[in-house]
Length: 128
Image: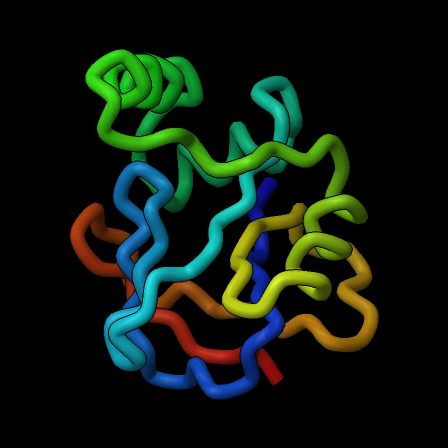
């Protein structure tokens, strides 16, 4: 099982995306993206954590609990389904999320192709 990283922006080809701990930063544009997560038990979240973030969902939950306790940050909002993620991405400029591979993206959303898996930089390009 794999996931597609999705966003509403059409100008991301060649952009490096920092996905470490799910704080997505689009470095080419030097802008912070608005990430959206899926609920802990979703197949998409488990696959995203394992395949892209190289972490477990449990490890990421511990990370966010520590960040919340220290007052530094809060985790991305969660959506229940792939459809909910796509609606969020379409409705929020700069939003980025993930859905299970094979999900119909509809219009206004682009799939990004992960070409390098690393914690500090994940290269992406738009999928045509």
